[in-house]
Image (cartoon, rainbow, N blue to C red; front, side, top):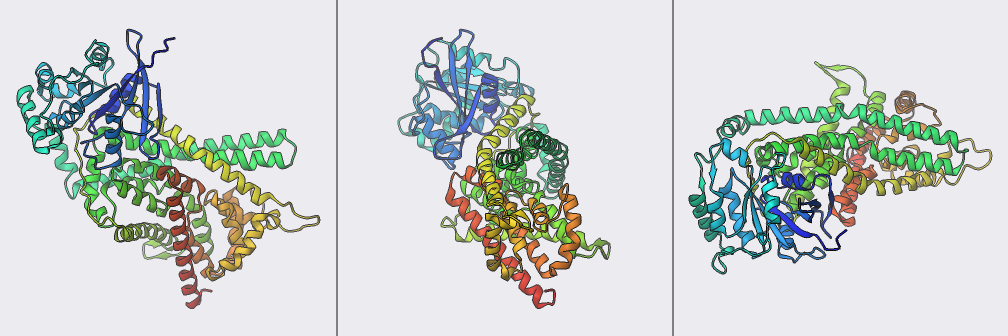
Length: 622
């Protein structure tokens, strides 16, 4: 094996130029995904072997429109290309990828890349789409005018990168700087760059029309202020239904597998602390993490397809004005919508938001969306306290459930609006989007994207969730009940003692000590509160549904309506989901921001639940 370090290539280009598809074509499964040091920007590196046997390291840099960075992604790309990024070796050469159907925009950035003076090659991608539209690109003329190697590529075709590999292998094609350059200092002048781009287009490109006929026809409908919004609503409804429905069989299968493994371990090991740690702590903790994976993969399947097809930027464009009024952006819509299924994939989906300020605002309000984990608690309390009668053509219980969902949505909009008013930078950031041509997503790119996101989720969230779940198991298991104890074991544990202590704190909300105890293990996942309440009341049930059926008459008789309403409101706001908090930490890279997110949600939960309880008592519901 050769000890010679592989040549380092950096792939750069505008978003939607097909750069990542070209990266996948070159490297296949030989990829590593991480984050750049100190930031949440994704770092993708892969390897490939040329026909000569030479090995190359390829870095897929974030998409950028300019080195005058308007986002963290663009700043990372600029600094890595210049060799200024801490801990990141400077690339030996740069491969600048441009879209053959949109050279008027993409060549401008290629001129900025050329101005770095590094060895580079220009990969003119999507040549097949350009040919179908009648666009003719004179590659020889473009190479002569730019002074760098220019090659055609079709990233979605087998061997579509062959010309690029040949150029990389060519001596000394990719070992020398550009032979032509703009006058010194002109590379930073926007007017000069635009003028040079127009000159290159006139010399080397013949374009019958600026946009494709099929794009114009689709956009007449999909960007229509009324029909476009209705179409988007239909697409989002289908995604929402799929994330909800398609994930259920897979999640049930994971639950069954976790239950089988827990039962097997319980049957092999004698009853004791070790068996409890493995079954109730480690196996349950890992199962609680992996059970989210089907939702994440289904969600990202749709996001990848929408992104690769060119529709996602159009959805952001349609909703931007509406979302901007609340301090968000059009890009926030899909992450927030996906949070109705689970806040974890919703927070992860904020990576599509380029503006760091808008991305942070979306992350901070995503937990306010009513996720599916709240439904068992809502069903229990609504069934116990809200009569099943009709109000006109609507069911009263259904109206209450709808009201809980709307309360979460309106609260998210209010919180983001307040964040907008309090932030130091009160300027409005215009949504700058390129509307790429519509295209059919390539299965290879979608599958690689799904694999990457699934692995990132398991690696980043799993460790924290497992550790905290084991901690919760310890608090709920120790110390053991004394001899002759008659109450539930949890009553004598650290968690039980904490619950009794918290009862005084939560008295203004109408919460008794049993509720306080249930809130502690409920931090692992909100739906755990149902089985936790069953344990507290010394009930035995095979599953949460049976526990709910047994609990309904007990809490209906022992709790007041005011307490039930306060607990419903509490669950609208309280971030009782460790996995969500862990994801906030991982995506923001900040314990401080996670603490702020946790603190404001708990403060809202306490305040709103207290107001609900006190108002209900004043109206005679206590």
